[in-house]
Image (cartoon, rainbow, N blue to C red; front, side, top):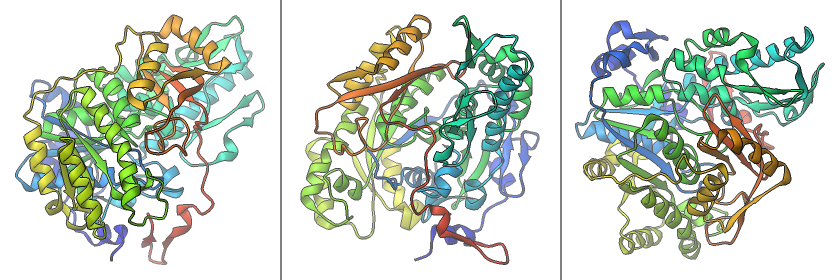
Length: 543
């Protein structure tokens, strides 16, 4: 069988200008990055502001195994499937981070016959968006230390500078460092507040406002100090000028895809940019987007943070699962067929499905089907879905492309015509403790929430000024709890909170659970050891 990389290398892409023209994008609204990538000017949104939005479809997943369950593959397959049945469809996905690409998971551009191209460019440096975010973030760090060097007129407390440094790589050695001026730390770029800001900004003025609002430190009297005090915000906007424009690429079957913004869902809000989403909604009758990791993380934040800021909601939610993941949540670790493990693992998909019901959005379970899936396990899953009135579709887009997603596409179109009764998990008038408690109990299934002394002290302070903001809980993606080894969903636990901080520019309060790390490390054998390049510049292996 060909590798994902070989499939994309042998595929024939259309000129990206043909893709943009078919969408109705004017030549003056595109900036070409070669023949296969384009950035789209923000002026398009002004031109189409009165056009009715298309139907929004959110793709999420059950709690994943460490290698993922094919959410992006299903998103791309569904996009191709909708196009194959004659629908005008656009997809809006996140940009890959080099951390996972070189670390554990590898690329993030789909798999098999359900991929986007140019795979190599997208998974590597693409259009430089993540580098622009890293540069802007680190320049702000440099400006802080430069201010300290030249006399500290703002009276900054060197022990309470809360703005870290960033790098788009996994490097555990940088989690805690000492500079010439102070103790500091690095986070991965996908966890940067500037990444979140880029993904939430609605234009250059909004980008500037959000960057100005970043909390960088406290002064020696305990007052908050914002990025605006350093007078470098316009330089940050200039560094991010091109990065703010959404990127347009295509699937192997030439369906249009925006790939823009890349915050992680475990340590950030996990959604692609609002600009790309809005462009897709104006250009397509159906828009397929995704949110990172499982529905307890990405979908919860998509619905409670991103959709609240946009004053929108999806028309359909697609919940992706695999038999492998369900067995994993039944404590089968070797990837072998095990009917009893599958029965136990159904507790995980049950909680996710019930959570989605609570939001009041029509949904369907999409099983990412493998050619070697056990027939008895497939029958058990079908019976479970029927008994519990869960609509389900088996998707073979990995092997068959659009053909393998026709059933899902038709069912999604039907569901998109149904009425929604969208409800948030919490109201903005709730205080921060109430918001965390509602997510913990309603989404995670926790008995309650326990706070460390430090977390409680910080939340008490934040509650006085930022109680009106949404909360973004940073948590392991491998469990409903904050304990990665707790699989399934049938267990008792209290959610343990260790820290809290405000992402003032992004517009939410980050609440960190015990054990969460914002700068990942590499595994013992990273994916980087499984990729190669020959003397002609052709890349091979796992990229």
